[in-house]
Image 1 (cartoon, rainbow, N blue to C red):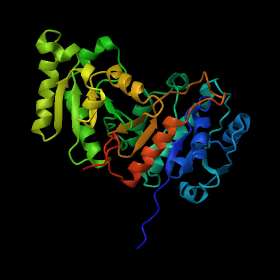
Image 2 (tube, rainbow, N blue to C red):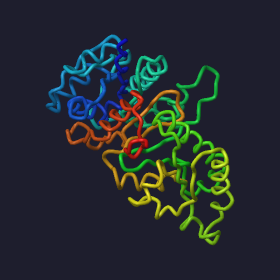
Image 3 (cartoon, rainbow, N blue to C red):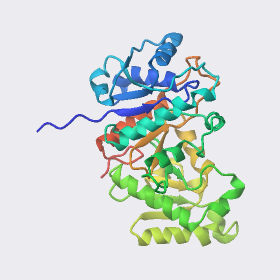
Image 4 (cartoon, rainbow, N blue to C red):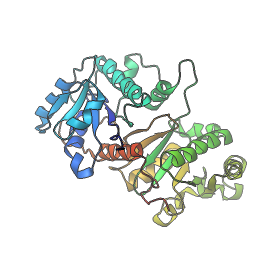
Length: 348
């Protein structure tokens, strides 16, 4: 019996005043060169066609009534699932009036993925400040996705941000908090919860039988035996011991300044950093244009470009689609169940 074709990916609109629309158009143009799986953008046909005309991008845009129509149309036009909310956007000028369309696009993408009709959710960048002006009640994009993933009345799942590239994958254990607040937030319970989700999703999503997790220390030289801080001794090392007792291949705490060079990266599949910049500085140095944000812990696959709305360059035709292309490529790979390590090497 012939296997069913892969389910199309659901690409969200993002903020229509940002670079999301133009990089989506550019990603469709490069579909063949990068072997991208069919995707449908959940947006506004007239708005996207207007962006294409304004930038001189030759991309035909076609409305579809169901995401299942996307694969048959994908070679000849960018399939678009029309929104009920209207979109009126001027590049570089974010407007809270577009919040209903932005949120509807995300909600519909998640609903399609949860119903098994979309193979993955790929999100274009949003600006939280714009949504806050319209009454958005969630701390951010990922928290909104987690809330949409929960059953009615249930606690949203813990979501974990992994930044992935062909050469490095990193996870910040604490994310968008002030650096001064990190030591208090960095508990053994937090490290364990994040590491367990990472290990599970690398097995389930990436097909890595025994994921190797390298945990960084918090302090210089991983605390130098307590001379520069005791978080490694009192918090991080005990968490690693618990993970190892559970059968998870966890090592560390490693000095962060020697964890990310090329030779060190061959010894793990993902590095768990203790705070935001400890994780994001190395990957953005190594793969600024190609890194992908992968949300772990959700009941569906979600990837996104590792950059923001870039209002300052929106509408100028200079935005690079590399990170969105990488996000679409990775989402397609994960949706197909292709095995391999986050760094690109095949599973032995």
